[in-house]
Every structure is written in C-alpha cells, then in structure tokens.
Length: 116
Length: 111
Image 1 (cartoon, rainbow over the protein chains, first blue to last red):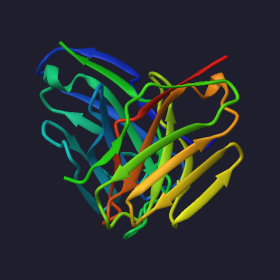
Image 2: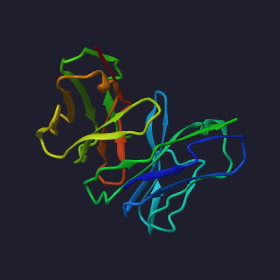
Image 3: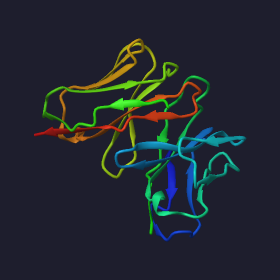
Image 4: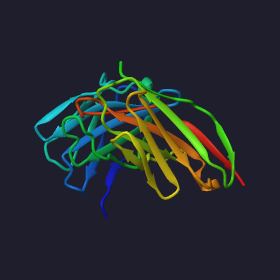
C-alpha cells in the first residue's frame, strides 16, 4: 500500500530532551516536507526537501532540524524541545513539485507532540 | 508573506444542499491550487486540484479558479453529514517548494 508513515504517533516529553520523529514514504517520491498544525494558525511548513541533495527551511524552522540521507526517509529532529513546540506534526511527500507547479502532496497520519 | 485566506465558518447546510467554500490567495505567481478535507485529529486528504481558470468537476465536487481575481472556490452538491469536516484551501508558491494553506473552513451538514 502506497503511504507515508510517521512514528511515533503520540509523544509526551519534557523540555530539553532530544527527540526524533521519523517519516518514511514508499512511493519513491522526490519531495518531502514537514508541517506543524496549531489551532488558529493552520498548517505551517517547517522544512522541505526537493530531493536527497536539496533541503531548505520553510516558514517556521526555528528549533528544528532535518536530514535526507535517503529518498524514502525524512526525520524531524528537535534537539532541545520547548513547550511552544507542542503541536500536531505532519510529514508529506509528492512526486516532484517542479518549478511553478506543485504536485499532489500525500500526508502522513500525524504525530501529536506534547512538551512539558 | 504570501497568504491564503478562508472564512473560518462554521458553515452550516442541511443535508442535500449545496455547500459553497471560498478562498483568496495573495501570490500572483501561484499556478496550482488544492482543496483538502480534514477530519478532526486526522491528516488532510486531497479532494481536488485545479490549475487552469474555470471549473473542474469530480463527482459531487466542483472547483472553480479565477486567477485574475485570485479566487478559488469549492462547491459540494448534495451535501451529506459525512462531508462535515474542515476544508483547507492551498496554493503552491511560485517556486513550487511549498503549499501555502488557509486556516480552513469548518463545514457542518445536518441531517
């Protein structure tokens, strides 16, 4: 089954304890992205990766890191989580946005993170 | 800052009626537009994509795009209670690196 998977789905942690949220897709997609969704603010992009060679910041990258060592995986790393990073996180992938045309994005199931 | 604006609602319609959802976008360079449906606590699910001016129909859903007015809409005909959800409008940025999402319109269909 073609899908984007995220782990863990739910996580409660404490301030400053490093964590990684994994994202994997089995559709051979070039493009992957991370979003956070907060009430009243909607979905906001954290980082994106056009392919394994190109990764760049989105609108809200502060406090996050990513890596794209292989096409299928795009982990999100919080080196020192803080309470303001409590949110619902979504990973997404698409075949190839290209220049000027964005293709359909497929979303993972989401990770609900609580930082105490 | 490029933006996509939607009326937050809630929009309430009776079962069988037409629901009309609207959004406007600020980036004139945007070429691709999408409507996603999101149930509470779930991930967004693509309903329609539209790239050219005019109407695009898929079953009970019709997307409309007017690039001159920077306006996108979604019509849902014969609305069902299962259509009750938040609908997200999204526009691809000019570089094609990200989707800019609106904050969503909550639709409630009463039986």
